[in-house]
Image 1 (cartoon, rainbow, N blue to C red):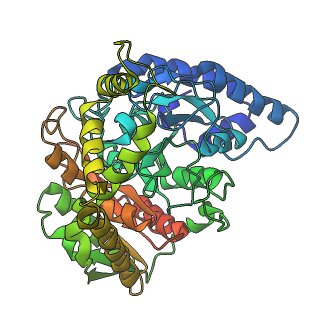
Image 2 (image 1 turned 90 degrees about the vertical axis):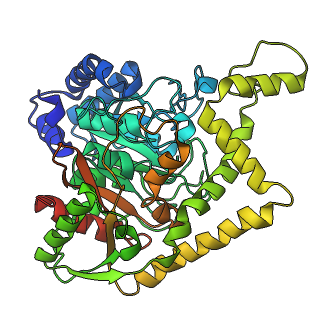
Length: 479
Ligand code: GLN
């Protein structure tokens, strides 16, 4: 069994032809992942028992002649901000180092209902705050394509696992780019679905109005199948959408001729690097496929970083207030009053980035500053969303870079939070507008580092987004 070359379709063929059983595949995949994980630190924990039980259920269904589901037997990694019943979920934080959730996230339950086999939980920036995976309390993750470089963040472990071949699919979470940016850095397809498309129930809250769960895989087809399995209304998440879930694979028909694509000038004006050249080549490729490419403007883009880091930190400061040493977390043993216990638990437990964001978020929400910062940022968010609505009255989809640069060196930006925040300059706008967006491999730099192209679409137009990405992938990207 060549584990790293598996796809959903190959797993299905193998199971149907009885070349292997789901349990044999799970055992082999676990062995492979456990052997290769030390070189990346992508997984924080392997859930072997749970994986083997899920695989056994698939084998039983096959033996009874029942449909084992669209993800039957497929080895999957789950970002450690998504809760798994009975399986430790740390959120990359020392605070939750021993936390065992009493329930499953809806996306996790749906993965298993579709026959998926969860191998383990993946490393991430603490509470999904970061762009390099270096903010994890459990050590950084190495990019499997360039071990001295970061895999991107915050879903760095999920991306590294799929790129390394220790998982076929992974779930990540995206608040401002944390699926698309690591997908771009690791040469994968990564999807941020429309806000509300996938239930957030069981996704540990960072910034609730921006948080999304989404898939990572090595092909557009595989992310389309995975999204189909986890999407849809969930009564446990009031913000999940009623909209019916189409069969996304139906959209992968190559019919992109005549599509109108917008190229936002604000995203390209400072992009002079090799990444920029690759995106320009990718756009040429789309033209050759018959798309009509137009120059468009999204004028509020310049304010996006400031807007995001006000709204995201404001929501985070409130969401992280629950980690107080009373519930969920470890408790500082230093003694003293109740107030001392809160302060010491949080002081010892949170890493520097979370503390920075709690302080920023508390400040922008405080009486006297609320109107100047938080309220203003909410207004800017509306302008950013309006830019997209206007653009989509003229074009069918928008193509853009994912990141200003490819994977950077470990340690390169860790002491400069502002430089780190700029990694997200092209991804946070889509997150703020709640529209679906993805990263699809575009090409490689001279040094062999992957560069992703971003495709953004109208709310709930995941099919249109997948159609374009699939045609681009089949055409070989920019190469
Ligand atoms: N890098 C961004 C941040 O640090 C985005 C994180 C995310 O999408 N979870 O906030």
